[in-house]
Length: 232
Length: 90
Image (tube, rainbow over all chains, first blue to last red; front, side, top):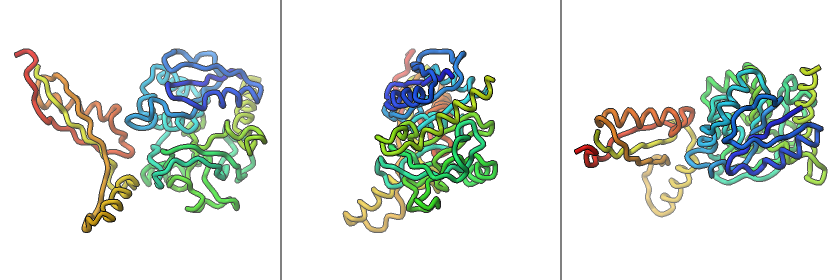
């Protein structure tokens, strides 16, 4: 599996992602935002960070980078795309995912472990998890408050496009378990075709016991499994 | 062509929670300003550009808002000419 990790000025989770991809036995390659062409890659990942200093809106300027045309094209052809944290913000700004990420309701930067419930296991990115499994994964963001209008939210829920939700230890999506004010405790969503995933939490920081959790590994093994199934 | 200075105001859509506005509201109340109903925080972008007319300048600003300056999911915008600068060709 060949994975492109797209980097922007201000990306800072790119090496974590690189290591996570290698950990599941795949090839990782950095693709600078000014480069063009994503042919030959099996998946494209957009890392977290603060591209362009979050100027204007988080992800708004990165979205205009030359490589984003190729990311949009790659996604349109059904290629798997994952955006984590700032990557999720960029995917929303690019229109590859609905909604937007706005300032945390607390106004505070939230950097801590959260609990996530896996809402869908029939995706390219979550097949190695159990339905309703609760994961411990860190977040680190100031603008992770998922916002969309009621009809868009109903559509996401109705079509099963909510993949991860913030929950408490018992797996319940309570207000107290919601770290940023996201509508309906949404932490991660998938697009209609099921090939574009965006999530605020950082699975690439939950890959080793030393880091406090290995619950993020499933995203990367699921993707590797799905891609090898396609190839064979 | 003339030079126009555009004032572009981008603000959170009505009904959208604006935590920054809320925090400022509380700060103003604690300083003794009572009777404030609501505080919303947006941003203003000023830019100078050449256009055939004030209307064309505003249209260009609105196109910029739709393309990048505002996010239609969360923000509304207003564009106006704040002043007409010296005509470029005059």
